Length: 484
Ligand code: URA
Image 1 (cartoon, rainbow, N blue to C red):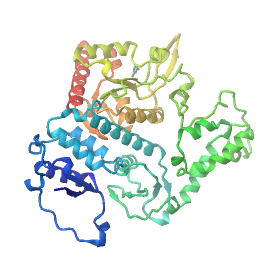
Image 2: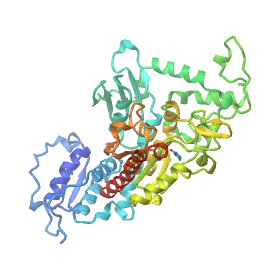
Image 3: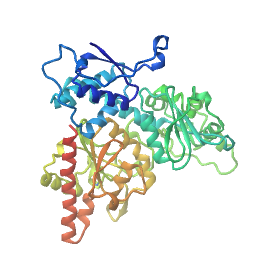
Image 4: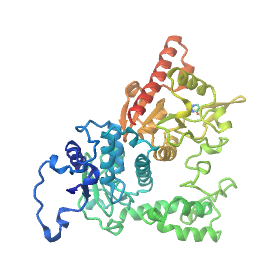
């Protein structure tokens, strides 16, 4: 007998899947449906479903029957939850196949080397990327105060069902400011203390009250310099589906035209240039295209650190690493060699790799800030801690790395890395060191920065800090192994 089971959310799927597994119902005997009950032909009333019983298992059940529903590791659940956001007609059937195989002891079903595992991992990666795009390109517009809550609204058309987790992301960043995010499928509302599903009032961007939009456009027009406009970067990096819902997208054709006509000779737009006062001719350097959304790290001009650095230092390591190590910023040697952690701090890291047994070649190694910040001291370039706005500007790249690598565990090497990973400038090492915790679906392990270990004068304190680093690596590896 073929069972038809409804699931319209991960929570529903999970509940049904648990019962099906316990009753030993194999994937080929279940048809999953996402249809609303009200979509039923002639509005037929569905009979309340009894718990699945042995009778639901087909007579031709495979000889390998599932054991009573075993507890799934949390990381596996998280993968399934992510994959459930992937819009595919067979998503719930596929997820059931995954858990069925896993219950049979086929743990390789989670591995990219397995055919189903490869699809699962690709789905998870796509979802992480979609979340990242939505974080980067979603634009809130302010509503008139008289309109009451929500104070801000945003419209976005995601390709997958990532709205709930994106709403959580913004709720952590916007304090008590109320907002609503609309998509063609659903709306979410932040009332200042909770995220709740919003009313389906937003049919499209035209529903958005536009005083905020007018303000945004004025701001954007006055800060954007067409002389610096790099058309191919601007159009190539951000797909049309994002541009069309970004207020500044409406300005782009006119700005391109202005840039092409060479209309802009000064370091600001017409509006600003029309103001009386001193005209400042721009230098050849400043005339370089401004890349608000750079297509490559090397072209990044999101802050000014690029000016004094030799180059941007990208992360290195396996694209499917399960552990990502995040440092602060490249040092003098890293800046010259274009590789993270090859100088003195890298040697401390190597020692920790050796003591913990974690392989440097198995992890992905990067920094919160990708350009070397320094000040001259005689002939030396002395490390300078990056400012919070530099860390925030560079979080664009860290988020992109997190989305594309998709590590299960992230090791924060020191306070700057921790702030960048959490997107919280107030986060401190003292609160977090030594106790792994979950953040946005992955484990975070916090340890001392290797440079701190180098600097500690007291031998005993140095040894203790090193032990924290080594233990952190061991814990990271254990958590990553449990996740598979
Ligand atoms: N310190 C860091 O944080 N990163 C490096 O790459 C080198 C030193």
